[in-house]
Structure formats: structure tokens, C-alpha cells
Image (tube, rainbow, N blue to C red):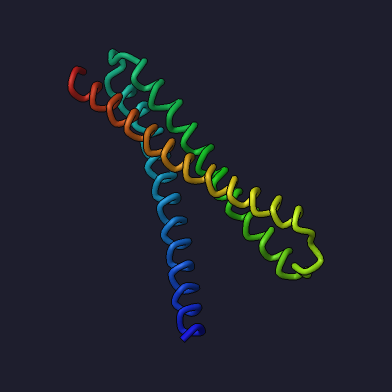
Length: 136
């Protein structure tokens, strides 16, 4: 029963990570597309106010930086896990184990906050573009 549970847990952990990477990729794509909208609209209608587009640009770039950091943090986490699995866990002191756990939890918390930040920035971009389409 334990082996079956472990197999299911590993399967869902893999699905979760794949879904997370797909989500981040989709957000990167949306931000890249939103970054091109101001240039296209301003080339067609140069009289449109530029400040909403500046907001979109800054939010897009900030989102992309946060998402790339998420990929890097996730990679670092897996690299760390692989190094620990290659070495002997028994050789670590309790203090080292505690420090390692705190680092892993800190990375995880940062990734979660970063995801919420990116979604918030995306909403700001949508409001700014909505303003342009409604009043331009």
C-alpha cells in the first residue's frame, strides 16, 4: 500500500510541476504579447496618451523578471535536492538539516508570492489597456 501511495504522490508531484511550468510559460507569453500592444497601437494612432502604455511596459518587464526568477529558483531547488540525494543525509547535523529546510521553504514562499505579484501586475496591465480602448 505504501509503494502505491508513493507512486501516486510522485505522479501528482510531477503533474503539479508540469502545470506550474506551463502556467509560468503562459504568463511569460501573455506579458510578451502585451509588451507589443503599445507599439502597435501607437504606430496606428500616435495621438493616444502614452502613460497607460508605460504602465503596461513596466508591469510586463517586472512580470517577466519575476517569472524568470521563478524558473531559476525552481531549478536551484531541484539541483539542491539532487546534490543532497547524491550525498549522505546522515552526515548532516541537525542544524544543517534545519538550515536546508528553511532555505527550501523560503524559496517556495518566494515563488508563491512572485506568482501572486505577476497576476496582480497582469490585472494592472489589463486595466491600463482597458482605459486606452475605452477612452482613446
